[in-house]
Length: 330
Image 1 (cartoon, helix red, strand yellow):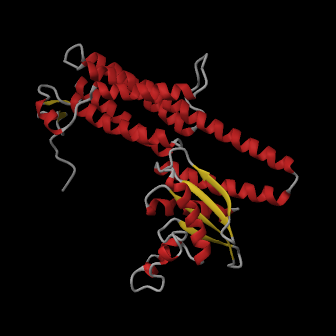
Image 2: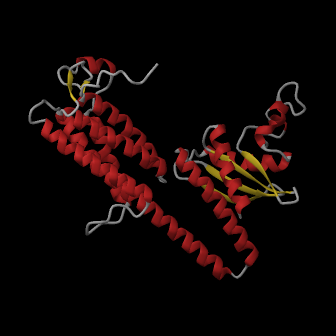
């Protein structure tokens, strides 16, 4: 089916309720601006690092769709209400809660700031500026058309919310750099080259996994074991399931113990497989679902294992792969 309809060739467009207006109509300009804002929020979300912010921005996009549908309805909201939930006071309250939570975590500001130290924050500031432009248009529209109070408040609070999300992105990057700097100083002063080198390697592997997990919006636990299956490094992201701690370690151990990536064991544990009831026979110490990977040296010898847990099997495997790719680099 073609996406073009030719109905707008003469400079008019149809609103949600079927009313046709000029494309230069203030109402069209208003919801078009919030459509632009939604697209910009999507860009910012793909670049964001903070896992909570990534989830919140998904929510924002869904709400902007509903906002646009309402602004695109000129005469009667009944038809829209039958198909969609209107913006409500609870949505405004949700953003206010996020703003309050983030404000408590951020350092106080006593002056204006430039729009974004990081790319993700800069993109969020662009979204904020577009939202402010949309708010000005909505205010002008309200002078000649009815605009619900909840809609006006939502738009005003949204720009504040995008601002605080941008600040959180910058703060997260600042904290990350601080941790890296502290770690580097510790390693330089430790005087033990081998453990220092190994610690840096573990940190970089986990860092690569965390970046992928944050991009996917899936907080996880990560475990590294040596060639004997003993735990050597562990990291749990904020928000990861508590059970993921034990599962990540079991996955890493299982990969080394069985000399195979855990997802490769799935067929072998079936009733007709050679390893049927493996998990039962090992008292649950060996797991056979994806997320555990063998680590080998350049000669093909097993030197350890990596385990990721916290998301769906496919998500855990994708996150682990990023860690293994980083290992190859270093």
